[in-house]
Length: 371
Ligand code: SF4
Image 1 (cartoon, rainbow, N blue to C red):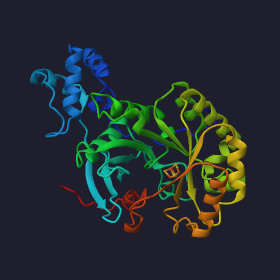
Image 2: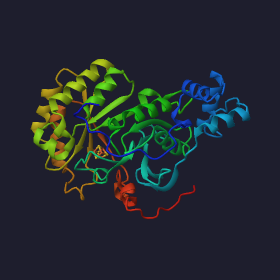
Image 3: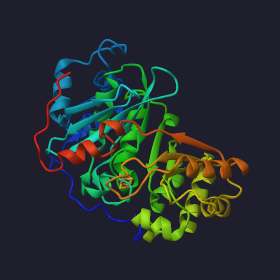
Image 4: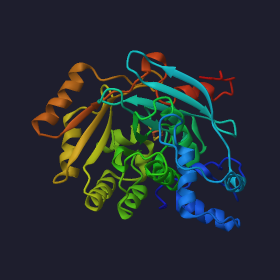
């Protein structure tokens, strides 16, 4: 991490550090962890043990069992912490389902099941931190502040809880819930590795997306390591003064530095650069923004991922009018800059991203969900 990227500000949840969680391991790591505790676990046993742990009962083919004594020995040297599902909000109008989890230390975080274009298929939007330190002007989570980073197993466990409600139909994962993923890069990459492993959740690497508000050192790391995952960078504005007002983290990195990092990432991975754009009325839909795209991203493939500002009322912001939105889309179309309009579900049920956790932040008693 460079001096320009903020350090994670909060301590991790208390846990027994000598023990790792089964949901944060791939088979080679489990084998090595068992060996370090004097347990001889063969490679095929490590694979079968993890595959059984990740299988969804009644759907995935059951792997050959490993001996009970050996399973008990391995489990004794692994953590067995679990999440509690405490609230579930389904919006029948759009099919989004928002889940609120309680971690073992009592903190709350969310995940969202997102319907994909292909009917009956879903992706899961995963939180990476409890709260967030980035303070983006348009985000409820940003107003909470950061409590701690999530551990890989917590992200994986939240994915599995959502997946198990739609076995065989959850095909993607998106690290874009609460928190800034590239402020917790080690754990996010570990979770992505487990989710995409054939003995894990076997989500295709290309169906996993990491979203960032633009932490340059993290982007350069993804480039250096040639990580296979997609990347969305929530640029939102390329006009320096506006960007600084909407995204306080912009004080640490100029647009030019961010664009250079993205060009490096594109060069290393060959992937298209996706610019996340929270569209805000009276702000980031003018000709200056389109000029910024041309200035900083000429010659590299970019796509704008547009989403209307969600939690507008609390942030003193408003959604763009049809005329404002149309003017931006017309400019992009005229210059043949591709764009996608995204939809943020659940807003009408007061369940915009971060809101479930924000409601619980004051320690109010949650309602347990049993099924
Ligand atoms: S938009 Fe993302 S990075 Fe910004 S405050 Fe919200 S959770 Fe944090």
